[in-house]
Length: 570
Ligand SMILES: Cc1cc2nc3c(=O)[nH]c(=O)nc-3n(C[C@H](O)[C@H](O)[C@H](O)COP(=O)(O)OP(=O)(O)OC[C@H]3O[C@@H](n4cnc5c(N)ncnc54)[C@H](O)[C@@H]3O)c2cc1C
Ligand SMILES: *[C@@H]1O[C@H](CO)[C@@H](O)[C@H](O)[C@H]1NC(C)=O
Ligand SMILES: *[C@@H]1O[C@H](CO)[C@@H](O)[C@H](O)[C@H]1NC(C)=O
Ligand SMILES: *[C@@H]1O[C@H](CO)[C@@H](O)[C@H](O)[C@H]1NC(C)=O
Ligand SMILES: *[C@@H]1O[C@H](CO)[C@@H](O)[C@H](O)[C@H]1NC(C)=O
Ligand SMILES: *[C@@H]1O[C@H](CO)[C@@H](O)[C@H](O)[C@H]1NC(C)=O
Ligand SMILES: *[C@@H]1O[C@H](CO)[C@@H](O)[C@H](O)[C@H]1NC(C)=O
Ligand SMILES: *[C@@H]1O[C@H](CO)[C@@H](O)[C@H](O)[C@H]1NC(C)=O
Ligand SMILES: *[C@@H]1O[C@H](CO)[C@@H](O)[C@H](O)[C@H]1NC(C)=O
Ligand SMILES: *[C@@H]1O[C@H](CO)[C@@H](O)[C@H](O)[C@H]1NC(C)=O
Ligand SMILES: *[C@@H]1O[C@H](CO)[C@@H](O)[C@H](O)[C@H]1NC(C)=O
Image 1 (cartoon, protein in one colour):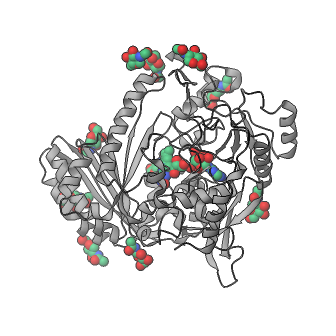
Image 2 (cartoon, protein in one colour):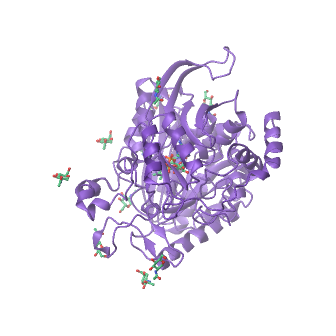
Image 3 (cartoon, protein in one colour):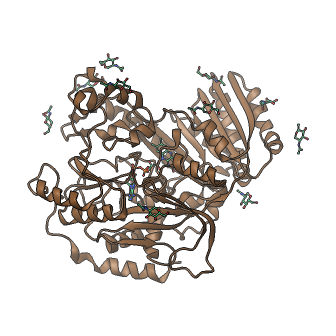
């Protein structure tokens, strides 16, 4: 069912085709139309901080005047350190730029590789935003000068959507305001609409900060889970959907947001919620980051703090049949686990496999009873070395702090990944052996319980999110990587492996979808995979709020029709 406002949006979108600008390219720092120094000085006089000139994070290792290389080396694999650098991406491949002839320009930590340090895809100048007004000035400046604009929060994006060669940057990282509301009424709602224990986070708040605040107020937040919690709480994570081990119980990020404030392409700072700018609020929940404007704050519901019971099994295997048997049994158990509120992360390959899940809805004794048959099955398999346990956590904080407190991990290296949602009917199969066999053809995959349960109970039309999420029970991921300094031929070889794995995964359920935040620039049909049946409606909202496509990201709504650098219309 489409609310009337959204039908109107579609009608408006279809009639606003006349506003295509005459100039077909964005201004980049190497073009004549780039703003002059005095233009930038004027901008600087209107914002709260000096303009920033981001540099690749390894620059101090080539030029000591630019900083301290020892500190760079110490921080390199730390997601929080990387997010603190205006010129860093979490994955180093998004700091580099590949020319059409295959030459790669970048600035590698390893100074012995034989490359000089160059700017690559790191934006050249930008605004270190602290307030909505800073963002309004930056958006107006980028719009009036027709700039290639990049919005960066933490730099975690897997498709390089927070990088851009020769671009102008709006950096939201220092928008760190955290406000706790004992009682919150969304703007425009009647007084009877009240939520207790609600957080408003500025655009730059990261999950580790949000979780600390939640702990102080003894409440539970649904958020991203990664080493040190460096993912942003209000940026791309939310805009793409936002998954969590807690999602089967409490919904995705998009199911927990009450209100969003945003600076739109016209420079206005507006509130989007169920009572005003409903169409924008709908699009901001699943329509992807960097597309609708610059979000300045996000208001989330919380849940009562609760203990969790968890189960963990990890195996090393020299016997592929044994691994197949274990995965088959996990697939068989999955529907009932999700119904009991378990969420978490599994994955591996024939040589090793892990599965970790937790639930607030069960006791530790129930968890032991539920998992004993799986543990016993593992113990009986030839060629297995098994570790298994069940654990009780007194609250989310204890779990998070135990599992996600390593300083380094997942970042500081090149990486490309992809994902696919597996629908209920694929998991509730009478032939789990076939599904297990398909998955184990992949060199390494993630088997995540971050969907189903509460995620499936939400109305698919309630948010802009791809409806494939609502019908899924398991979320799978794949990935590839290479060494910094690898040449384009070597990268293509790694990439071909990823693309082969994508084909295997997608053929399991061709009509399902991928998670736009954990995907690649090589998605076969990104409009369908990322947005499904919501694509046309999202496009109409895009045309209404950003008719000139100031806000462009790779494989984002409105990005087709632009070249590979998102600089010129093709
Ligand atoms: C180590 C790691 C762990 C992860 N763990 C999880 C997880 O547990 N769950 C999950 O769902 N995903 C996870 N992800 C994926 C994550 O959701 C995406 O990388 C997401 O894009 C990160 O958003 P960000 O704002 O932190 O990053 P950024 O790269 O800064 O931004 C991502 C996108 O959002 C846009 N954007 C950022 N801020 C704003 C803003 N204020 N207004 C408008 N647009 C904005 C950017 O332009 C870009 O397009 C993980 C990624 C990594 C690298
Ligand atoms: C660089 O940082 C390290 C570690 O913080 C410190 O010991 C060293 O003195 C610094 N070097 C310079 C030149 O400042
Ligand atoms: C590739 O193109 C870049 C940019 O035009 C140029 O600087 C470089 O020399 C070229 N490399 C080769 C091997 O032709
Ligand atoms: C840096 O690169 C050189 C040359 O490829 C290599 O020999 C060396 O092991 C690398 N150093 C590190 C720390 O990776
Ligand atoms: C931060 O939040 C407080 C209210 O808690 C508000 O008064 C202030 O203006 C906010 N600051 C910014 C920069 O948004
Ligand atoms: C877990 O229990 C809570 C409260 O009883 C309930 O709201 C929630 O839906 C349950 N979760 C699942 C996945 O059934
Ligand atoms: C849980 O199991 C332990 C040991 O198996 C037992 O002693 C205890 O009574 C059980 N608790 C409940 C609430 O059943
Ligand atoms: C599996 O092998 C790894 C690497 O050798 C080791 O660290 C881990 O403890 C092993 N796990 C099990 C369950 O044997
Ligand atoms: C591991 O699994 C075995 C069954 O194979 C079970 O007896 C044992 O209690 C489990 N260990 C833990 C720590 O749960
Ligand atoms: C992570 O948590 C464990 C267990 O609580 C603790 O021993 C360790 O010191 C923590 N590590 C960090 C880096 O905080
Ligand atoms: C690219 O790198 C690979 C692996 O390091 C090497 O074998 C190959 O010769 C390189 N190709 C070119 C064109 O430099």
